[in-house]
Length: 262
Image (cartoon, rainbow, N blue to C red; front, top):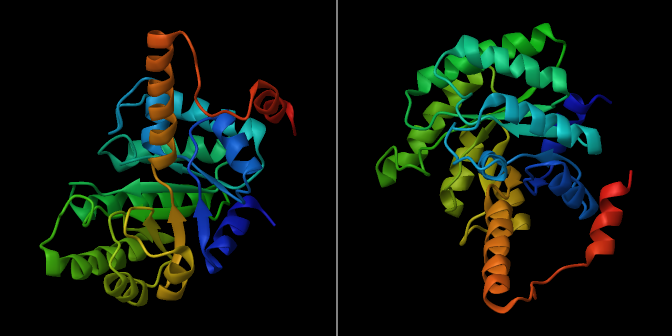
């Protein structure tokens, strides 16, 4: 089975994605038991010294993808934020290059833009993928909850409306970061005929409960990248104060062996 078809099939249960940001973190995630890989746009940007929010040059994004594909054959989904531009044709060029690098899926978001713009981007990306003979998993992210784009009681309805729009444009899944209420999760999962993706947050139901509610994908988002950067900051500060590094570590040998395996 091709990577794209395999990745689609993984959404029949609950696919859990421990988001990575380079070849090393991809190896670590795979060794921890990941069956597929997904990047976090924030963690990728931070690893190159850029802020999240479409500031990363796309040549560095492509280099990151190639670095991950070099070390892992697992299906890979890439977070491309808003496509790194407002022009759907420009987004299509980027996705064509990513498909050439061997990806199985993308995340692409609406943010504060009109949902019709994201629908236009999804439609042209689907055309590009079809032309390449790839069943690309286009995970449409809506920020209705994350950015408060609707009033409290109106959030589920607006999310469902956008989900229908994105599905009609060619989306394969709907990602709703910030969604955590059980009733709203169940309502959105039932109303949108797409696999529902949520992001790990405090207060989110356990994975088994999420699956029962209709969720088909759970992403760590930037949380693992945040933890890694926080550990680096604290370890560096402690070293500069005490001359010692006492942060938890599996040890040089274990990490180095992991990087030369496979």
